Length: 211
Image (cartoon, rainbow, N blue to C red):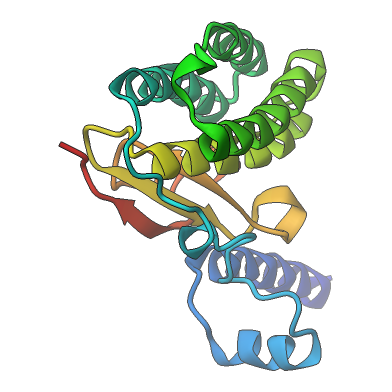
């Protein structure tokens, strides 16, 4: 009986250690060995490395920058609700963000800027619709991933942020596939894990303030 009890303690400790190790984002020896067997799955590799793929537009109209910046408060409210494990709050924030996006005036976008915006708009529309229709907070968190990538892409492309923003990554999001989000703060406060593991993740990129 004592042997079985000690074995249970050991197993629980092992699982806890694996979770902490996965969240750290560091490459330990065990992770490196796993990566060699399955190189397509790396615990510390972002789902998408958009920083080198997003084109930064020149000569963006000031009204476009202001409107894109206006998406951020609603997006951050969505993140905050997920951090607090509040699915109803997340759905309300998604509805508000959808309404804000619906008021966007595209008349100041040129051809290439217009095409880029339409691509991101389609992703945002699908993700926000998914959240508004979700009945499960984990489903909501899954939908946050493409929304976050599009918000990041819009902010980068149109250079719309007037304060530093942080592009952060959680290796445990989406059942271990990993996902990114955009934050106002350098501190890691993880919307994908919520109260279970708030500090899981790392900053991938600091988006400099645009003056």
